Image (cartoon, rainbow, N blue to C red; front, top):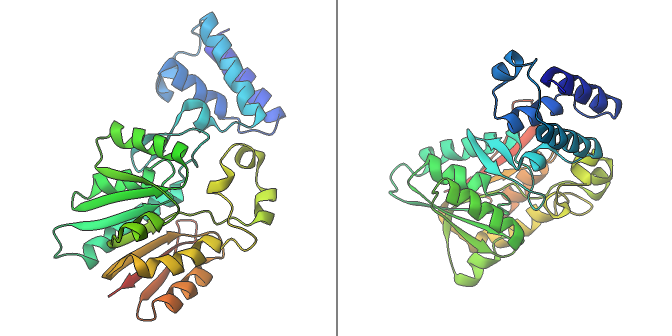
Length: 284
């Protein structure tokens, strides 16, 4: 089987099964360690028998619904490759905007501080925590997650980039509360999908990404409501809270923050697609 024959077969097979036709090219480029230009210029090359078998096996995984990132073992985020597996949510481009927004607001709010303490809550793959630690050397970054399996992935990502992040096993902010720790910044991309929305998700997401990282009860707001009980116990007097939120949740989360911190300046920010995606609370 030549490269062009493998790609033609994969594209047709994926299309017949209502999967992304580009998945075959992504897999083959990774397997052959070729750029797109290299792959296109070698279309007449024969695949080895081993490469053919692996490719066919992986394409069948795609058809079964396994996300291509889990097959590859990584996803791109903020200019870096992060390890992922089915114990962690696959990082999304929208979350890169959350990271950018946090970095900008830290510069504005903490100009005179030599060191800024930050916790990433529900860190998953560690993409947010590791990116923030690498982008701003003033940050003292810690990260929590209730799932030990997720923390192992996050630790691998921190080790890969030699990022100074302290990982703590625990539920939301409870590890900090129990130790009496205060921080300047709390950032989180918590579960925010409702039970009803979960049932309507693509099987690629619903059947393979971790339920615990996606669903937040009947309202989708349960984790934000819990944050409102815990945030006052961990934030310093001058602080930043940054949340990713689900579509249509911006105003509700803004109201929760304003009720908890009446003096806070709370903003709902749309993502690049014009959807309410980030909520920032600045507490002075």
